[in-house]
Length: 266
Image (cartoon, rainbow, N blue to C red; front, side, top):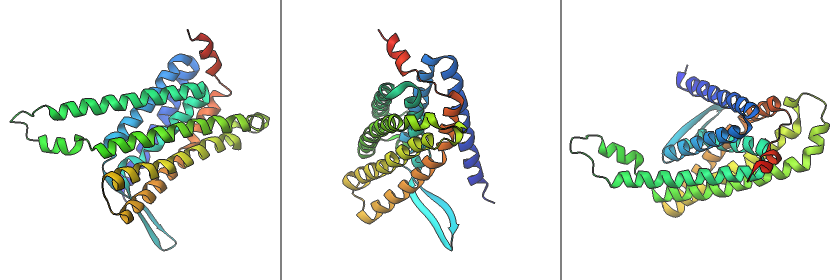
């Protein structure tokens, strides 16, 4: 038995569950701080994916119908879908305007992160520090990776936000007319699943094409393989994490603070 896979799955499940439950608790009890907490989770996921984006990993999806499915994709593909999930959580409760605010804050934090790391790289290491080469290999920034991640993040996050808001408004009457349990309301599943799949698929194309083909100079066939691998992994994770968004919605009910916070703005 591959305990590494079990460890990853367990850690993934615990992370999603804790973030969802903590977010619900804060949003319900402290609405204003709920936006702050969700934005903090949003920035954390984005920063984590930025750090590990340059590492290419192998994702063994097992053998199906006699074929082994082994994909190569940036390591960040396993956590990047969480970014879309938290953005949907913000959009659901605080509205489109606040979601765009969260995107802006997240992008600014990435700019600061790059500036701080670039500054640290320029500072000479102590002569006795034996891990400098290893440190530089991990944190030495690739301009192509950074530029590609910023472009793909901004385009796809804005697309996710506006798609989510549009679908929610269009399907709102049907959603409210649904008589069953909220967790089985198809219109809630549709807006989260559809927006995540579209934005994550497009992000895979933009990021890999710019970072590894236009700037990195990798052969096109290798780049296409990376795009396909990352797209499959991201879309799968984005689809699998949808129940946590629906759980979030079910626990919050019809909570909507977008108008309330707007009225309290100076």
